Each structure stands twice: as structure tokens, then as C-alpha cells.
Length: 279
Image (tube, rainbow, N blue to C red; front, side, top):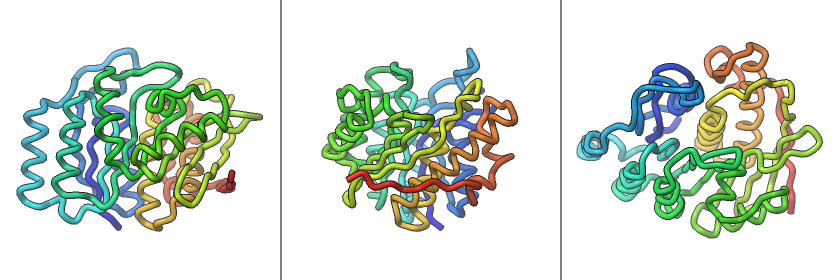
């Protein structure tokens, strides 16, 4: 069991941001201290939402309270997800420098399908200030391309971009859906031990992929890594667990990830996939 300090979004309805990550961590035996970056009524993908970023003065006051009472001193990891505004990157950096967590995972929630869905100044702050301080980074293919400025049209392109990103700080780079070929999605890992992938079936029968998949993947990967200290095994577990969660969501015709109703997929995925070495 570990203690995780997480800065990410909170929605009242649905399973994205902390509503995806915190339940997963609890199921894996971890304690979580969550500092919300935004408070939304629901995921913006519903066509509209209420709420907005948490006031930065309040966020900093809350962090001060945690630091003054040394509540973060024994945290095993710091996690960042959806930041909402560039000022939250400053909050994350201040937390990292103040209590120096042994592990920092940055899930750079920037965009997908060819476009940013956060402000450019936030994306730049994550790239310039947060990534160099992270041990693990979990971009999707679009985010990896944006962070490195490289075009990614193949698995080889993704490997080159991931290696480029690792030279900027994070020793562990995991790119989700780095490539798609012959009905399989490739989740890619660059680490000091080499280059690896886990392939999972692409669900072409899904009318809509559930929201929160990236949040859940990063959380399960971190939770497993904290429990077992094996990044290739964590990649395989997170890939299998997410596949099971998406499958359950699609079968239930739910646009929300089945974090609760299919929680067994987090602790005991029904189908595991092979770890393949690529170098």
C-alpha cells in the first residue's frame, strides 16, 4: 500500500478525472489525497457543463495546509492529470519541490484526435515545467506528438518520439494507442530496460469510447507499479484492466467507464495480453 497525492479534475457526475483514478487506487489498496484542479458538473463531452477551475488562491491555501502539517511527507507518489489552468502547474511544481516525492507521474491531459482541448499556455507549461520533473509520463499519440513536435504516423515514429521525450526528463514513457494495425492497438513503453509494447484488440463495434479511459489507465498503471515495482508488468496489467473496463462499458451501452460495475477488471483482469520486446 502507498499514499498518493493527486492533482486532477473532479466531476460531480461520471467517471473521469479523480472519479476514475481515486476508486481504482482504493481498489488496489492505496490511500489518496486528492487536490481538485477544477470542479465540473460533468465531463465537457456531454455538450456542456457547469463549474470551472478552482481558484488558485484556494488551491495554494489547501496545499499550504497539507505541507504545514506534513501530511504529504510519507506520500509514495505525486500524480498530475487534468490541470485546467496553467497556474496549477505552478502548484504541482511547488508541491514536488516542497516534499520531493520519490515518484512523479504526469498524465499530460492535453488533447486527442489531432487537436488540443486545453489552452496553449497550459500545454506549454506542462511541457516546459512539469515533464522535466516527472519520472513517468503517459501521453496518448497526439499528446506525444505535440510534446515532442514530431509527426507520428507509425509505431516506429512513436518509438522515436517517446525516446526523444525520455531525454527531456521522464525515464519511463508510456504512449497509449501509439499505433493501430490489423485490429490491434499498441501501448508503447520506453524505459531503461528497453522498448516494449502490449497489444490489445481494437473494439470497432463501440459506438463511442467511454470517457475517462486515459485517467483510468494512468491510475491503474501507477497503482500496480507502486505495488510491484515492475513497469512492464504494470503496462500489461493496466492495458488488460482498461480493455476489460471498456468492454464492460460497451456491452452496457454506457458512455461512462464502468469503474464501479466492472471493478473486478481492475483487481483481476479477465484477459491478459503479452508483453513484447521491440529491441
